Amino acid sequence: MLPLKNIKILDLSWYIPGPYCSMLLSDFGAEVIKIEPKTGDPSRRIPPFIEGEGAMFIALNRNKKSLALNLKAAEGKEIFYKLTSKADVILESFRPGVTERLGIDYDGVSKINKKIIYCSISSYGQKGPLSDEIAHNVNSLARGGMIGSKAPCIPGAPVADLASGMFSALAILIAVIGRSKTGKGEYIDISMLDSVVSWMTPHLIGFFADEKAERSESSLVGEPLSYGVFKAKDGYFTLGIIEPKFWLTFCKAIGREDLINDQFARGKRREEATKILNSVFSQKTREEWTGLLKQLPCAPVNRLDEIPSNPQLNYRKMFFEIGGIRQIANPINFSEFRQKVNKPPKIGENSEEILIDLGYDNRKINFLKNKGYV
Image (tube, rainbow, N blue to C red; front, side, top):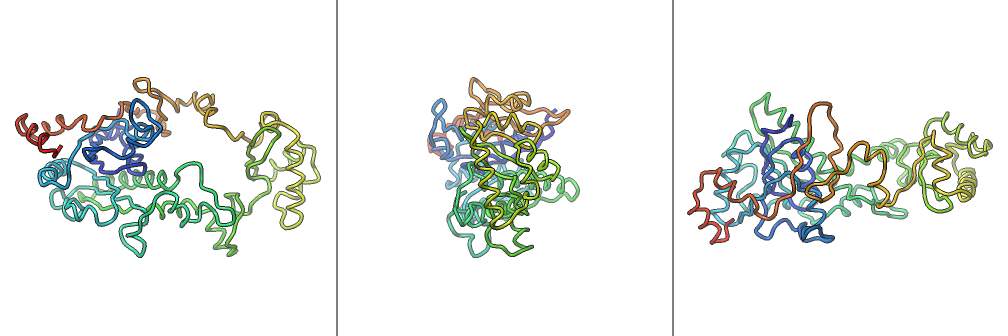
């Protein structure tokens, strides 16, 4: 069963946040019509490439249909309005004000379809002192404090992009449930910065408690000595030891019971304990440490080439192929619901199919194509 089978989404978004959101929903049956310019979503042209398409585009646009549409032309708007009358959700990620100028903003389309759910994703939100500023993932991470200020480091994944996409998917589902009770549509305003700050809760709540403007690399309040990334003889591994009982076991396992009282050490003693641990860890390989500490929260820092062969991920079927192209699976697993699996579309691949469904005949479709409207 595909639980979102009867939900139709018009996706106007590009790059990562919006496409990630609509992909998560399309995996469980939502019909997603990706409305893109004649030149396509710009992520189609970002290397590396798979069969001529940008790898990121391939990763985020499975299970979707593509309609190439010129929204600046009156004929393009007319097609969009007809689609809106039959849609459940509109998703867009233009800069604030663009949809209003195009005549496809929520106030306008809600007059066509009062039950429409309209989700806007932007860097800083639709209104406010920063709403007009241009920004991408790294800028939202910086303003949200996620890259740190002592030794700034950009996370290995585009956290602001993905977090805002996830919050958008959650918000859309909440709005769909709400509409089933009220019969009314909803406007959703998702900010990448807001999403980052929400995920910064562990750090910010610590600041609210002690007003320390700088925190360690640890993501935990209290900053235990046993939580972080450590260097072995040939690579890196992580420890996530929070519970005192695990710390006790750890100290015994590495033969340093003199550190038992230092899990939350501060100042000079923390520096001394850290040097001791670094010296101990440099004596064995990454594999030796993860084997020795197997019964504790300990894991290797994997390279990208080590991830697809991970036995746990393969057991959980986190990788699959569509027409010979490898994909990362939706991480949500249900007991009864299944996931849909279709290849990402070519630019405008479904244009004719969509227009015919709207009642356009071949003569009109050819006219629209010749004029460059679709």
